[in-house]
Length: 501
Image (tube, rainbow, N blue to C red; front, top):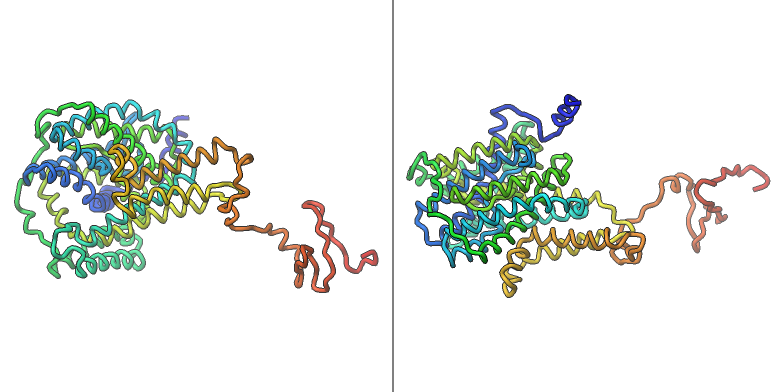
């Protein structure tokens, strides 16, 4: 029995082992894909707090270090912790606004205290939250995955323009052109490269795009040699945390949003990999999130969550091994203790990242659309679930600041396209497909259902002959003789030579 379970476990796509060199090569792709995202929150918080460049560097190095450890925990796993899926972990951007508000009142120490306590509470309630997985059928997961991809596209657009909106060349033709060149490289390498080259197309495009950027004067590596080469994270480098009840409650809301987004990411990568994801696995993934988040403040970092953009990389490369992402986690840890390597990666021009980001994030959206194509839209209201959820969820994306007049707790939840789409999809699915049974619903009279594609049984077409057509609701042959229609299962074969006919 034990051998059978071991064989079943090893048969999972995510358990494949590719060897050390391929694992670290593909893992580096994951690091480069999410590097900009993982350093953005500490960069924003540090700048808003008036920290020095050295202090901001400490925040960034710690974010990389903790993100690497969290990634290893999530992918390799230990009992009760880790989904054992190819998911990269990093600082969640969903809590930045809340942390900035807390920092304005109590400083960075209050932020660390709120993150620590809220994460411990989240660790305790993670299994209960995971029980809602039964409310994530394909109509919900497909909608959420699509929203993940669409919500990330503005990030790619910002990278393509140059990231720094205060720079003179922000949004210039040269920046957009560099992003387009990198995007073209991805397409060409994927289409015309060998299997190995196609799988490394993102990494190769980043490398070649950066080389081209150096040639045309769009890359600057002059700062790489400045600063420490090796530095271990110092616990509580900014002082001991302080604890404020209001700050903790605010961060707890952020934790619930993080739960929603990580659950969506776990389901999304499970769909891409083609493996089973149940409540037990989601609970283990959420526990890994919360344990990493609880440890983060000790090492000067913030809440951890799964990175959606790396789901797109898994989809486009078709490298589904969780050990590849674990190798990426090791690289992140090394970057965290070797700031010089982090400075090398940070020197990659953002338009180059933007070019590959268009492909990666678009692939996530395409994976969601593929999932939605499997949904049954006949005689139900699944179409309106998709329409309302996507429309509602993308409102803050197409019109930032739409909820500026609402309370801060509301904005924390619904300013995220991913969390608002997820909540609306779950709510509508419960209303239409659980509380109100399909047999009692009015879905068969809905205009949304009426728009669904019609289908005709193949057996009906096989019974037709050339010239058969309908007149006034009756089926007639080429000679205008009526053809009798009988119930299914009672079709009679009639010989036209029979005098009785």
